[in-house]
Image (cartoon, rainbow over all chains, first blue to last red):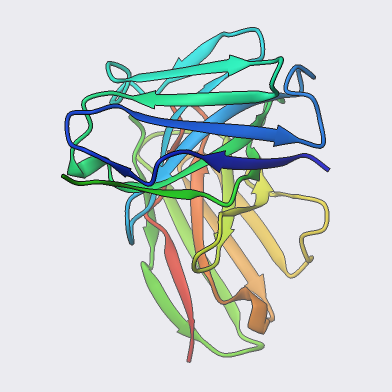
Length: 121
Length: 106
């Protein structure tokens, strides 16, 4: 059973870079069965897709965040990571990592528990 | 971006009720529509893909329908564990989610 777990600082200062890592357990990140994704949820609000990466390194980003986002993968550690630069209070959210299936009708299959990141000085 | 609009934003219902949630896309998305359930403090849980295909292990009281721009999620015989917020999501293009529908206990 594949499981995902987010980790990283819960507090980031404005203008700095938010960095999170998602560790995949119970399966290989290189299996080719998933795109590895980041999704966020502002407090009390809906869900926003940030981007995803394939184990090969191919990335796909939300155009609204693309200029500030980098997603990378470390297959040796079975991890993938998110970097979001120049953060503001508007980036305060619960950040989830999730697996996106590769099927034609795809969906976000498995989710981590989420981690709250607060942007504040 | 394709905008997804859910209605109602919240509803009150009783155990055993039939509940219908609507999701409308700003353009034709064929059947590229998923549904998720989220309980407070928890990650979303995937329920339905391709508008009407139930994920394995999801109870059969959940059903999805629609195509094009109009979709519905129906819960036939609401159970206590179904009180949650439900989100639709389109995968026709850059993925976007609806604003959510909170199902509360009457």
